[in-house]
Picture 1 (tube, rainbow, N blue to C red):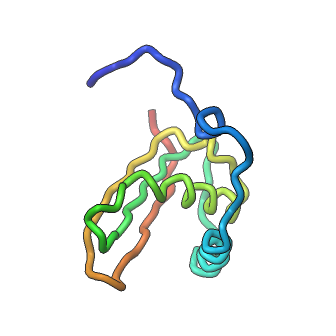
Picture 2 (cartoon, helix red, strand yellow):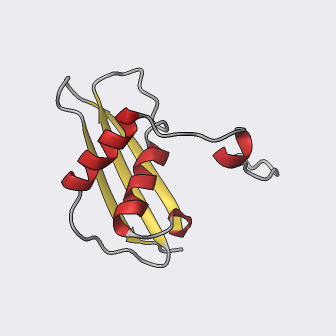
Amino acid sequence: MVKIKIKPLSVNVCYRGRRFKTADCIDYEKEMFCLLPKKIKINTKNHLKIIFGFSNRASDIDNPVKVFQDILQKRYGFNDKTIYKLEVEKKIVKKREEFISFEVEKYKN
């Protein structure tokens, strides 16, 4: 494993100005709220596992992570700073079979 001694920058530090949600993002969030389970167990330290099923092989694995994470925290009323471990997997599926699977577990260090 390569270790680089530098402070990681957040998206907020990397970009200037305000970012506004698009209409697509607002619609996506509303749809996700309807599709997500009513309750999930949230811990003080969490391990979030996500699998994105993409139909396009060119899709970047990290692009939907922050959006999905923000929706989860808004839906379930937690702060994403409680995520201590994040596992993200990319699967290629046929068109119209795209999906997101996720699981929140207690973080074990």
